[in-house]
Length: 349
Ligand code: SF4
Ligand code: SF4
Image (cartoon, rainbow, N blue to C red; front, top):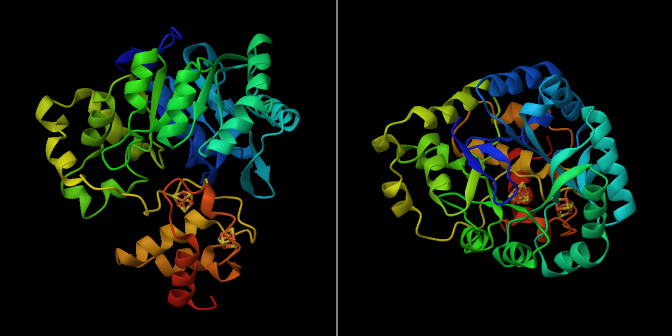
């Protein structure tokens, strides 16, 4: 895998990285197989934000004996609340959850410790001045992380973090359909490493009607062509997905050409779910992204949508319209309306 320097960290990261966002749905065996395949193909940057213990343990097993060949990003401020992920800004709790992560993965340290998923100005102030950054710096001093990172979706917050001088790496959406404007340029100016997430807009870009214009190779080429981007971290659901992305490495120039695809996405794409799960936890325990994904399958005419909906533990009808999820959604999806739509679609299932 072609390597690039991650800002001024000195870490050499493969341009094709690994986002773990989809692993929580997989068995230990499937995760070990998928990560093993990535490792065998030279993928060496793994962003692991998910707090699910089964997935973390499986990752730990997959990395065993190869820790020195990989760079791992862990996240500070994320934990499991019941069976859904949640955020905390309490430094004592965050440190405890981080230590749990290291223990679950059987590791002594991470390479990048991301201040997890910071979008609003208020949250930024809380994270940077309320003890979480301090906690990350202390963990770094203790050798439990080599570098400090910052993840989020909003340009203003990401740029502030980049320019604060406190972070070495930023993780931001960088894709044809969704890009945090100005972040790549800020990272380049400050020589901060940029990790490109959500290059496929939650997978939407690889579905109709966009799939006529966009392939994984084209979407990855676009992300890697932006200033300061060192690696792109798609989430992989299968070994086949992984190989679809690795094709970028061998693709000739015409197959990497993203100009027609970019022309298609001149407009703002907010409002569409990218299944990231950042809206969780839901007051009623709804797997919001899963419901949204089923709604999307219905629109695509999938014959499995009904079965998928039936298998969800908590249905959309449990939504009490509390609005707790709305501010957490980086895509500003009208979640309550979508829950109502699912109820209209599936009734009391
Ligand atoms: S509703 Fe928003 S936060 Fe929730 S999964 Fe979709 S895009 Fe992500
Ligand atoms: S508005 Fe509905 S979906 Fe959102 S947190 Fe409240 S109950 Fe859950």
